[in-house]
Length: 119
Image (tube, rainbow, N blue to C red):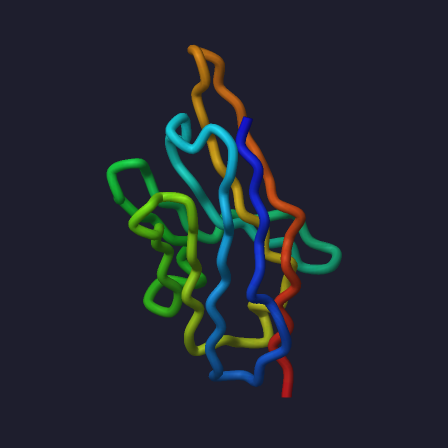
């Protein structure tokens, strides 16, 4: 099993920056890919960015050029650097990990961290 815990959310003005972190514990070696999702009030959860075991990344069109997903050297921490933040980026941000343990696929979620972009 993989456990995830996000941190780094908060209140920021439009145009500002935040860096979210996600600490992974448990069976780290089984993780195949990790991702950041977000859910705004009254909306469905949406994919923000993904990173594979090999380091390939992909982004939602709405955040391309502004957000950067990365993993720490020890593979235990996932980051989301968010620049040029807009009010529409306001949401709860969730960390996700897909893993394969003994041939069985699983998916873990963190508890989420609130990001509010407002003046």
